[in-house]
Length: 268
Image 1 (cartoon, rainbow, N blue to C red):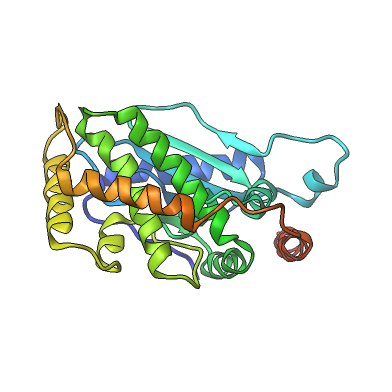
Image 2 (image 1 turned 30 degrees about the vertical axis):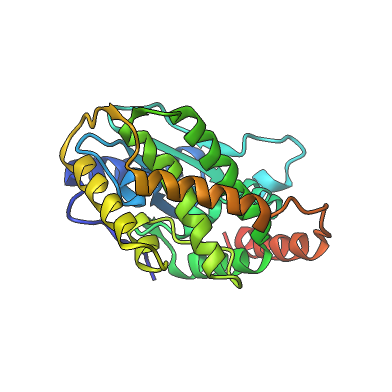
């Protein structure tokens, strides 16, 4: 079954350009796109009126590419065109990063906005990710990402940058409240709904999100107190709750991802 989930808020002309670009990529590079999603602030749930369109995809090359002794690039990048940013990873690269604990592929799999894809491919890849992803490594991915953004924001700056620390902090809260899971939603409103949070925090986040949705320039200032306190508290707790673990045995994870990879390549 073909996947397609495009909200009415997205400009049809831009979506048409993304669709056309994905088609050109498949034809020009001789690859099959298994999943193409939106990865930026539109999928995160806090777009501005002028937010970019950040299409990301996972592709499978032809068998001859994987059997060649000459390595090819494992990414496909296209030039930035206006608001369009369209880039993707080879499935092999996606598998390697998933096993290493990189949460980017997990986020792509959880995106609520899908340009194209095969439902079975996404479902099976989600199941694989849930089985091989290491909770602590995924959490520390969010901790490092969020802490870096919060440090860049400092005591004050562009208010839109608050979201780049808030979303990782909210993902950490979700992981804390779901101790058996490693794949947090990427969509900020969904995280708000699925976590136990103080009312003043939820209200502050919704007000800031509404402001960002209505204006191209939010201006500078300090983060609302409930948000700032939440971000710092979650980062402090995550440092202890998700410690850096010793090198784990990756044999099983590598075997499972290799099996999935071979299935997709031979089938394509």
